[in-house]
Image (cartoon, rainbow, N blue to C red; front, side, top):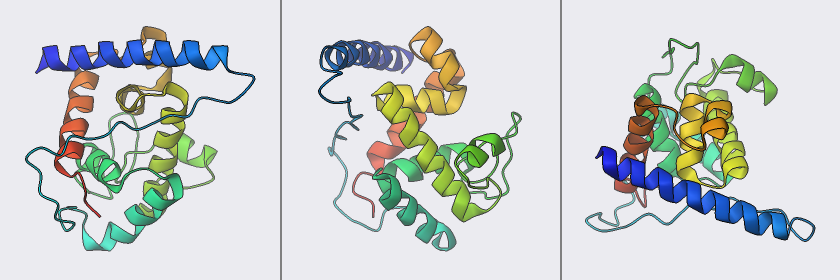
Length: 180
C-alpha cells in the first residue's frame, strides 16, 4: 500500500511538473485548469443511492458540489475521512466540522467553520482552490491535510500520515464513484 501511494505521488509530481512546464510555455495564452482524474469503475455498481451522506447534510453537500463543480463523491470521501460526518468534530490543530475547516480559512472565504452548511461549502471551495493551485487531486488532498506550504515545499506529502490520508480519501472516492 505504501509503495502504491509513493508511486502515486511520484506520478502526480511528474504530472504537475509537466503541466507547469506546459502552462509556463503558454501562460500568456491561457491559465492552466486543474482537472480531476477519471475514477476507475471496476467492481462498482452504477447505483446512485450509494452516497452515505446523512440526510440532514445532503443539501449542503449537493450545493457545495454544484458551487465548486467538484464531484459529490469526492466531497463525501473527504468528509468521511475528516470527521466521519460528525458536525461537532474538532481536530488537534483546531479545524472544525464535517470537512475539518480551519476557522481562519473559512473566514478568508467569508464563511464560518462552525455551521455545517457553510463548513461544507468552505471545505469545498478550499479544496477547489488547492486543485487550481496544484493541478493534481492527490497533491490538493495532501495540501488539504498537511497544508499547502508543506506540500509546495516538498513537492508532495510531507509525512506518512498525509500519504495515508490521501490513500483513504482516494479509496473511498473510488468506491463512491457515481454517487449522487
